[in-house]
Image (cartoon, rainbow, N blue to C red; front, side):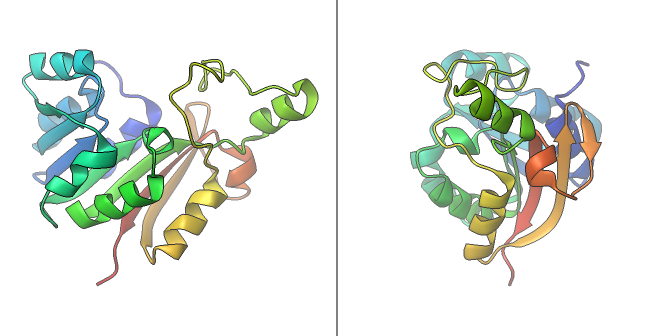
Length: 198
């Protein structure tokens, strides 16, 4: 089995065995396959890119082509134990509304995203005056699917404004975990586990 991207490995390690999962923006289904094979999870997926849908289906996964901005409303409330949105939030038109749907559909929601307040991003803007191109943000500004440049502190504020509970948070610098101290400055990626308080 191919090693999972670091944020996906964190999610996979924290999904309970035998649960029902909806992976939104599932790509080629790497996380879904890992959850199915290692944790006995009933994993379903929603993916915009038809080539990724075909790749996931070829793995024997249940994936539908769809758009998180418009198709999540069709899922019933509480239909899944977990809704997962990995490195997709910043590509949606209305991240706030997508987040609302995640915690409606899933009893818990994992969200991972690149942190645009990381010190290398700040340095690139300060010294070069240009949008950064890094290992984790490898595309030029005009070809990136990222349309919202979210920071960890922005996301925390959105979660608080929506009245959501943070059950867990993990921060990555490169491919390694880093502490929560100054995460908005030090972390390149963040993973949050959220729920809606009863």
